[in-house]
Length: 318
Image (cartoon, rainbow, N blue to C red):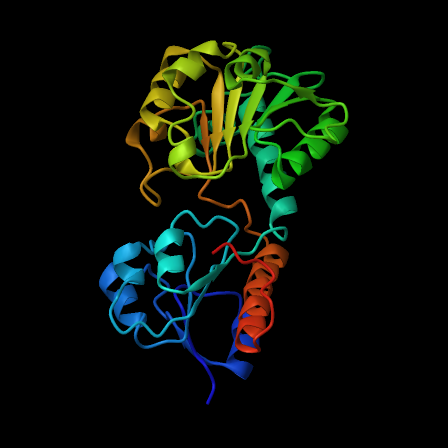
């Protein structure tokens, strides 16, 4: 008998087809997030649960009596939406999909930097609204990033890939702050505090995990340390930024702009951010290329295949 698998959101067709060849797969045809009661019920009906970042899998789901699920193959690199301690206590393996979304997310970070620096989002909105009055010397003046300092909060794979692109395409200088100094930092300047990095950066780009340790890491205090010409970029997790503080900083000119792809209350976006013309807002598109989303699904499928074959998992996080 084939193992039963629940996929909580629609995945790329190529991945769903592969999984259907080896498993009894239930798809979420509506492609809307499942509620806690639905997930709790699924724990007793399936052998594997395949959630995404849009699904919250707390202890109350994982501790459901009579749980049949033995593996959670998460579609995505981040896994703070899953209670890992509860999963371990229940004897449930948890995997993620690292590596494969590095390039796509780094590309989007660079796009947000350029869009915010050159104010092209403001320009497009003006044009579409029919308010553009033609070229003039002082219209929507942005700033060049050439020779400026890109400060990276976190120095993992995505941060390094972002640095490579910013260095090669824009001639930016690289600085970073992380819990441990990298042995292979190259020409990147290390800052032993976030505060020091914030003061030195022209663009401050966030590349940390979510969770309690980084909750509201960027707040009014840190924003006030940044240059008035600086730009904040977040392709990490929405919880890393205090959005009320950021919206106020943008309104008051504490910093020049921000480029955000993630939000604390997704899919809801803080109304104050929506009202900030100097905020570039992207709907969580960091990994949204065909190539990357297929690769993420195939990585999750690889972990499922290994689990049910009794082989070591590639990407076990719990």
